[in-house]
Amino acid sequence: MDRRRVLAAGAAGVATAALGGGAAAAGRSAGALGELAGALGATATPVDRGIGWTRTRFLVEDGGVPYAVDVLADTAQRPQSVAYLLPGGGLNFTANFFTPRERNLAHHLRRLGHLVIGITPREDLATAADITADRGLAAHRADARRVIDAVDAALGLPYRLIGHSAGAALALDLASHGVGKRLERVVVLDTTGPYEGDLAVRAGQARDAFQALIDQGSYVNDPGLKGLLARALSDPDGASPVPRPVDPATRFTHAGLAHYALIRTATLPGPANWIYRQGHAAGTYTFGASPAEDRFTLAHSPLAVWGEATAALGSGLIPHALLRDLCAVWAGDDVIAWDRIGAEVVWVNMELGRGGFPLGAELIRRGGNRHVTFQVVPGYAHGDPVWGEQADGEVWPLLTPR
Image (spheres, rainbow, N blue to C red):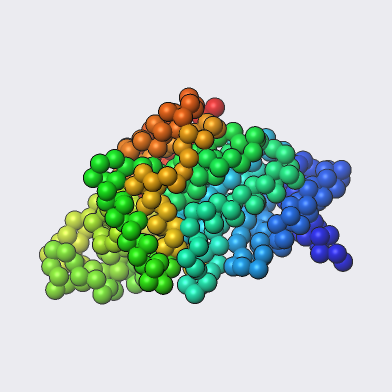
């Protein structure tokens, strides 16, 4: 059988849901998604299904490291538009937007009538040896643009870009380079635009530090979250190798270290942890007389959900070139063409995550775009808007204003 026909058959189920049920729709949808698979040079595999939804994965193999494109479709309604979900640094679609399995941002968007398409960066399926000096923001934009153009040609639906963290910077970068007349909205979830003053100088220093690593032949960063959370859940009381700041002669427990790293990320060493107003997760950490007496709790996102998300990661790696380019954005370098973003922009930051730095949104307005909002959610940290137990009521409605 011809390869295009095989791919079309594999995608027919999700396409039928995407374009409406029935025999005629099945024929149309098989053709549309088959065309998409052919355009991407992708293989299609049904991944998961539940009551009222189905999920299919396209694996794009173009001679380099492959990357995954997940399509989540509602089986009871035709989509009115497409929502592209762009994960944060080191994350993939499943971890960032499809965790927990039944209560997640992807399902929220599906229920609102969107065909949800998650574009996972290549580094998720890569090894450290696969990642090179060219995996910066432009390379990520090229991969995402390829998917968007193929879907646009196959389905012709209006669409929006929704990114979290590094994925939000990618969404802004895509919008600034022009991604077609059907782009309606850019949703920016807890990311940083240009800083001013001393913070911009610090961002420039971080940019130069990452470039120095690249020049030395070091191309990738491993945050280690997957192992950190796995140890915290499997052996919470075990001793970690990391000294406690209050008493360097003692060591964090595995659970203590995970909580401390999530809550107090800004205090950790590293060239980019200072960008958080507090950390990845809202919560409290109080040191006791011994590691076993430390007291800690997460305010919004349970540790088990963090563990579920990180367990879904592939490599968890972040290219140094991407981090360099993000630092360049923060430093105010000419990376994103703010004045060329013409779609509506909904920018929602977290008070304890990236905080209230609205210059990026202001630069878009100065370029003539009057449809730009910027707001900060109090009490939430960087990962809480996607994994928080109350995020569906306290954050997600802000991303999809009517």
